[in-house]
Amino acid sequence: MMEWIKIDDNTYLYEDGGVRFFLLIGNEYALLIDSGMQVKNAKELASQVTDKEIKLFNTHTDPDHIGSNEEFDEILMNPAELVNYSKPYSSVSIIPVYDGDVIDLGERKLLAIALPGHTPGSTALLDKNSGMLFSGDPIQDGRIFMFGPMRDLSSYILSLKRLLEFKEDIKDIYPCHGTYPLDISIVDKLIDGARRVEKGEVSSKQVELFGNTINAYDIGVATLLCE
Image 1 (cartoon, rainbow, N blue to C red):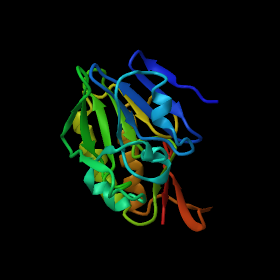
Image 2 (cartoon, one colour; image 1 turned 30 degrees about the vertical axis):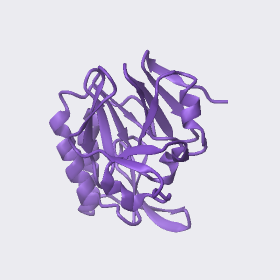
Image 3 (tube, rainbow, N blue to C red; image 1 turned 120 degrees about the vertical axis):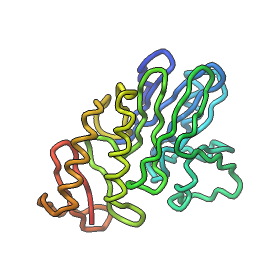
């Protein structure tokens, strides 16, 4: 049985078979950042750590990030992500979180930074007190999915370039895949690698994934999976 991993007194992560999600606790309520893949009871698991009200924010809605969404009546997300959401949401209240919005957990403010490209509504949260950036999938040192509908490499590069505007505020990056924490310096390396892929300067290796033949581009710091 997996257990919560403590980052600090009010921040935890949970490893869920290749993906991780996070629990951030404020003075007023707690926030789950994503809800896992294999587990279907992320909210119940979070209640083992805190007795505060627990809300959910989705960094994006790929299937490995929404495993426990049914536990919630309200879900915070960038509304641009609804085109990627595979679950019915007519009976769920979607609380829109736009780029630049601040989610205040009570003496703990999280700045939403939109990072479209991996998915249309991919959004990171920056803890303004600690400098922790919870990046979802776009910033990581693992495999970054850039194949299939609604993925766009050019948008991804522009999002990463824009993220650098916040580099003085970002101390550590906590992605949902790969190793953690990461340094902000990875963003420059991802930009450089993605640009080289876009220009055709990186050779690819074909891999089979979910019944598709995908081009895997090793850019040194990560692998971009593209069509």
